[in-house]
Image (tube, rainbow, N blue to C red):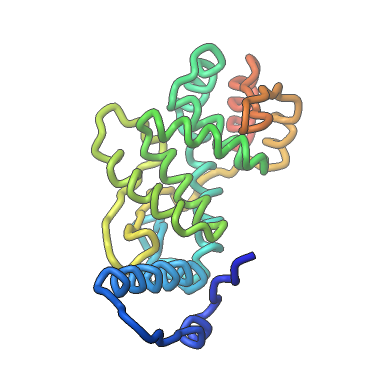
Length: 240
């Protein structure tokens, strides 16, 4: 079993060694790359220097640890998606035809019901179909888990998909590339200050009896039901 990665910069420096013999330019570049990757992975445990998500006129929030901010932002974003006026229609259509917009709405319901593996599958489906909001959700999900390389991947995908046509953007957001924030991007998400929240316990109840489909190497993936769109409509209406 390999040694564990250092958890602090001090541990990384303490493990430094000077080797005798030849040391080529390629060796030096490889070492520099490894050090850079380790330091980047440590950054997710540090406080954000600027907000990842800003709402209500983009006023900054109090500093949080990066994984805490990502967890908060992800759930707020999912609430915004399911409250979109078109979410019910897309979810109803998704029962008959698997489209990226419907996958996004379904994935956000699964996320709010703490069915994370199924949510991740359908978010990847949405992002693979060209939806930048799906990539944004995955970026926040991996930041919350501390999975830095995966978060970087979805940050890059998100930045690319922002410019693709036919975007379904239930929650307006803007991606700004920067060198001072996680994943090389800062994301501004436009949510109203008085956004209504559907109780997550009610979402769990609505998704309790979903069918699942066994997919090789992926396990049991939740599938939408014919009545789920009506249940979402009732949940959103009840909260208004």
